[in-house]
Length: 91
Image (cartoon, rainbow, N blue to C red; front, top):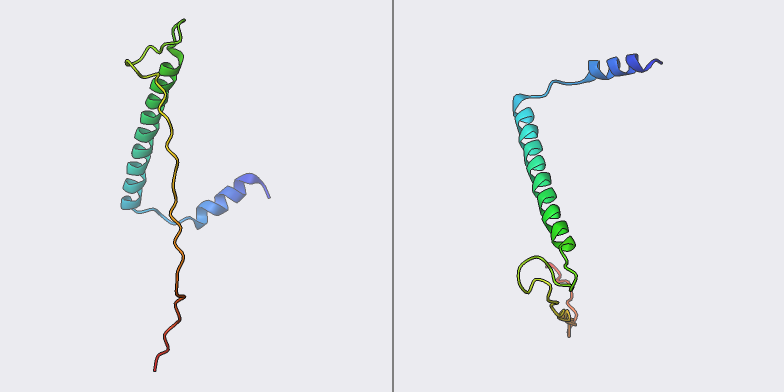
């Protein structure tokens, strides 16, 4: 079966899309484009901050931006049930 006839068959079976669906998809596309551009800008800023290192090892950004922050240990609380729950019988 030629590729053109397969496409024609799919188009013949396709249902029309309502205007509200088209509006929704356009809005989501704009939101995605906005998100992607903001992410690209953030990555550009982050990458430029990484590359601005002078010969003495100091960063070219804000004062103290190169200081290391010590990591704090993560504590997870574990709770054990003292008395196991029993299902109640309906009477």
